[in-house]
Image (cartoon, rainbow, N blue to C red; front, side, top):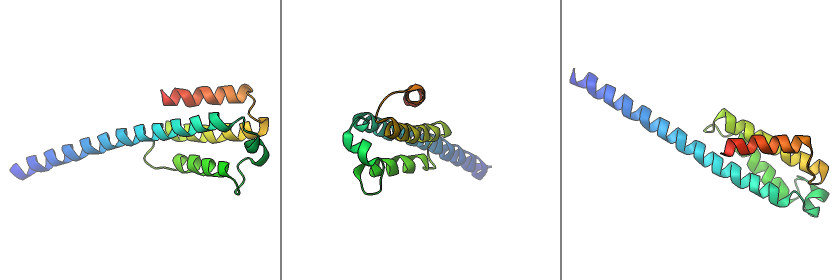
Length: 117
């Protein structure tokens, strides 16, 4: 009977640890998502970005790879993965519009910031 109780307690402790780790990782994902969002807001009007976009040759490609990596992380919630995908699409839209706002960019920014709250 004692071993059953010990196993039950161990299982409960492990489950609690997994939940805490998951919540911590989700918050870490939000920090990274926020950082990448802020970076995009910082370079969306750069003439260099408008000229080269996310070409493999250039610094903005590193941003794109970071967003793709974030989107593919297994420890993020589905909502955060969707927000990372939205962020990538927002970056592509800013590349096309040369940083100008339109209905899509306003919608995407709103969706991303709701995830970050």
